[in-house]
Amino acid sequence: MSHPIQLVILITTLPGRGREQIEAYERLAPVVRAEDGCLQYDLHQVAGDPDRFVLIERWESKSALAAHDATPHMIEADAASPAFRAGPAEVVELAATPLA
Image 1: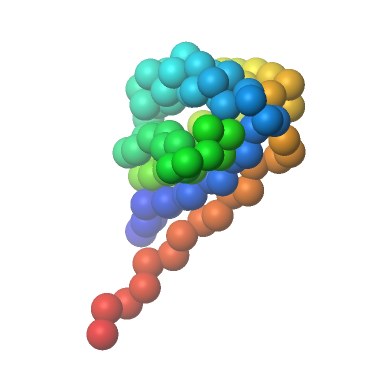
Image 2: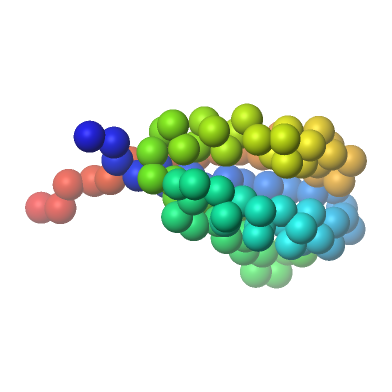
């Protein structure tokens, strides 16, 4: 059985370029949310720092995430992001912890 995948993606833009990250997300979010298997795709700005963001993604399965990563809109977005990002995003996959 496949389990949902949850990712936290840490993004830092070049100084003063945070607005470009928000605009890129606003264009991309409706398309991503319409993909099969997308459960959540939400961008949050770090309080007090207009150039740092956290993107939270949840996918029904690893295969849904893999299909998302291979879409033309994600390939295009990944190619465009170095223009305003300070470096590659850090992708953290979360694991469920058993409750005591």
